[in-house]
Image 1 (cartoon, protein in one colour):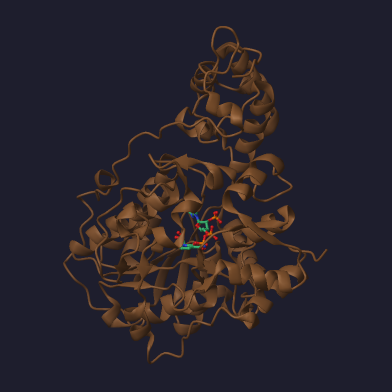
Image 2 (cartoon, helix red, strand yellow):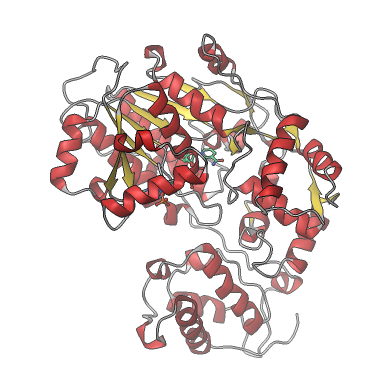
Length: 505
Ligand SMILES: NC(=O)c1ccc[n+]([C@@H]2O[C@H](COP(=O)([O-])OP(=O)(O)OC[C@H]3O[C@@H](n4cnc5c(N)ncnc54)[C@H](OP(=O)(O)O)[C@@H]3O)[C@@H](O)[C@H]2O)c1
């Protein structure tokens, strides 16, 4: 136990009000201490700034997850004040050792979350398979995978693609779509007229689309691709549910209303993250009823969302499910989403000069393989009702990646995982390192075993995901998953160096 200055809930409240006001650039008088902090639009980086300031004030590291379990300033201040005893000491010896205050997450029964609105029923039973869609509705077109799916759909069909976009108006929506495709070198002016923005929001009832337009889409869309989701490895289920779970429900509502529209849903291999699948072979059509031991809020939402899609399938909606692993860059250009986990991890570890020495297989597939497969499979009638695994048929070990990155001229050593975590706690203390905002994901300890989320991805705890049926279904196409070899890694690294994301020292 060490002696600290004691703070009352009122002290902490005043501190939080002034810091929140500064971070979001409003007057302290505009902050309501009982308002849910989420409503102030705090992103994970801003949340981390506030947590760091609190750390300086309190003298211990409050877990960023606290912000979600005690979501208002009042509740959070009271919880933090409870950490001090009357004589100003910090109660929990554990928190003085440099780790975060551990909070048992509220119990969450994912099976009970997987309930699809009973009014969502396909009208008129099953529909003929759409081989030549004229009008496609797509979500996630301003995202990474969505951009590549758009490119493939534009080439493989003659359809107009109606894209759900969060924007002030259609002009901004179109500009967002165009800029996103340009960013990945996929924009082609000749297709411009076929890309039609639909202003809306996954997190709103009826996708935030006005009723007339929703009806119109319901009557005229032939098929739906649902790729949008809020990808955040820090937020808990409660913060992601509206967009990821309820958003999927709204997509299914659109699919069933007025006429039946097949749904192509981008899920994730994360649906098999339950500890029940550790070491087990899981095949594409296997059911996935186990959810205990899925700790990541994002993965929890993917499990529930896919269940909703399956329920809709059991009610007669034609559905197909695509489960990618981590999605890496384009295999020919190396263009990638530099904000994704793999790239942030590589950049952050290079800054630290060390990588954790863990038995981990790089389950990543190039984005062009994933998008081509989704579009090809979606246009095959026999794909209806099936799930597909798009993970790499021959994943490489993390160690081979690190060896390769080192051979490229980067200075990097592998150190024991515990040591690496200690360096992360002690040395990664500002947003200059991209791992800073991922610290809760990398450090938070869960379950009786007190394991971190990355522990869960260690080879021994993971399922063996078969992609045999998917490869069989892709036979007859020219789609082949590029090997993770020096050529691919050279393509990726060259792109990251050329764009300045990585620099050789
Ligand atoms: N990336 C991976 O490694 C990976 C791995 C497995 C599965 N997946 C799945 O693949 C899909 C695509 O992932 P990604 O990497 O392309 O993600 P991304 O680049 O982050 O794109 C996410 C897309 O979802 C949209 N979105 C998020 N919240 C929304 C909302 N409330 N309303 C409307 N649109 C919203 C985003 O729109 P804004 O531009 O407005 O934010 C963006 O277009 C997701 O379903 C994800 O779960 C991805």
